[in-house]
Image (cartoon, rainbow, N blue to C red; front, side, top):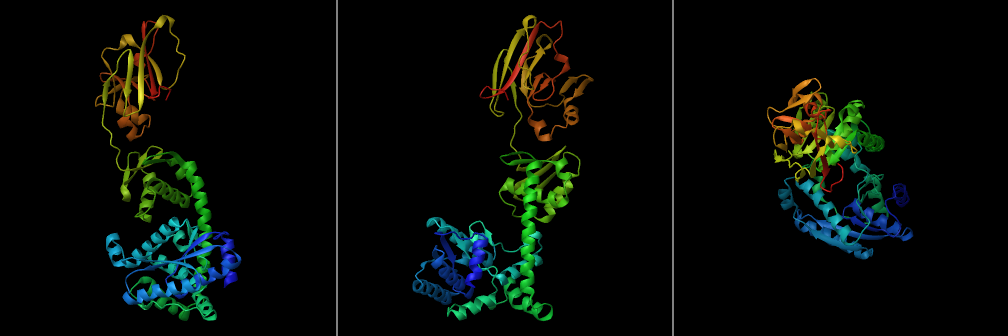
Length: 462
C-alpha cells in the first residue's frame, strides 16, 4: 500500500519534498488510512502534515466522538490537528442545495482557507477506486459527456488524491494489518443519498449478477476517457485561439467561418471555452445550450440567443459574438467645430478639423482615420453623431440609404448603433473607419479643403 501510494505521488508529482500538506480526516477508514500512509511516507520523503477535521453538526454526540477520536490519533501520531464546526443544515438552506452538496462545498472551502492561512502546498483527500466507480455511475445517471465519465481526477487545482488507485477492500485490510482504528458513520448505510444507494445496492447487484470486477472496469474506463479528454481539450484550446477574433471586458468574438470548418466535437468544446472565458464559469450551461449555439451559427445574421448567466450570443455575418448583458449605449450628436478639436468621451476619441487651401495642399498622412472633403460643397453645420432615420450616403453608384450600406458592407448590428458619422444634415460624409461619400470628393474646382483627423484621446492615430 505504501509503495503503491508513493508511486502515484511521484507519477503525478503530487507532493514535493518539504511541502506542507493539509489532509482532510473524517475519522473513517479511508481518511485514517490516508493519514497513516502519508505519515509513513513522510519519514523518508520529508514533508509536513496538517490534519483538518470538519464536524458537520448532523450526528450530534457521535460527530463529537469522531472529532475527539481524530484529535487523539493525531496527538498519538504527532500530527498537527485542527477541527472546525459547521452547521451543514443551515449552510444547505443558505446555499439552496442538498446537505450532501453543502457538506462537500464547505469542506473544500475550509481546506482551502486553512491552506492559505498556513501557507500550505496541497490538500490531500481520501477518494479511492470505489469512490471513482460510484462517481462515474452517478454521472451516467445524471447525464454526462466524456469529461464526466473521466470521473475524479488525481489532481485538480490544489487537491490531490493519493489513494485513487486503491480499493476500499485494500484500505480496510491495511487498517487491520496496522492496527488502525477508525470510526463508523452510520449515515453511510442509509440509502437516502444517491451515492449510498449506488454503493450499497447497485454495485453489489452488478458484482453478483454481471461482473465481479465492475469497480476495476469502471476505474479503467475513467482513466482511459480522462486521458482522451485531456488530449481533446488541448486540441480545443489551440483551435479556440485560432477562431478567437477579439476578447474584451464582457465580450468575446469567434470567427464563425473557421468554427464551422472544424469537427463538431471541436466546435462544441470551443463554444464551452468561449463561455467559460466570458463568464469565468459554465454553471447552468447544459448540452442543449451548446447545441443551440451550434444551430445559431448556421442561421442568418442578426439572430441571437439568451442563455443563463446573463449571456447573449449573437450571429453577425461571419462572427459569433458572446457578451454578458446588453451594453448601455445612448445615441449622441455633437456639433463639429471647423476649424477646431472635438473630444468625444464615450468613444475615447478626438476629432481635429482644419481648412486648407487647395493650391498648395498635399495629403501626407493618408489612412482610414484621416480624410479630406470639398468644404465648398458643405451646406450645413457639421455634426459627429450616431445614425438617424433617413440618413443617406453617396457612393459611386448613386445615393444609398445608410441602412442598406451597413447591410451591404456586413457591418455588425452592435457597431451600426454606435458607429460615429460625420454628417451634413441627413447626408453622411463619412462613416468613420469605413467609407466616405463621393459627393464631397476633391475636384480641380475645389478651392477650400476640409481635413478631418480622428485620433484617440492621447492624440496619436487610432
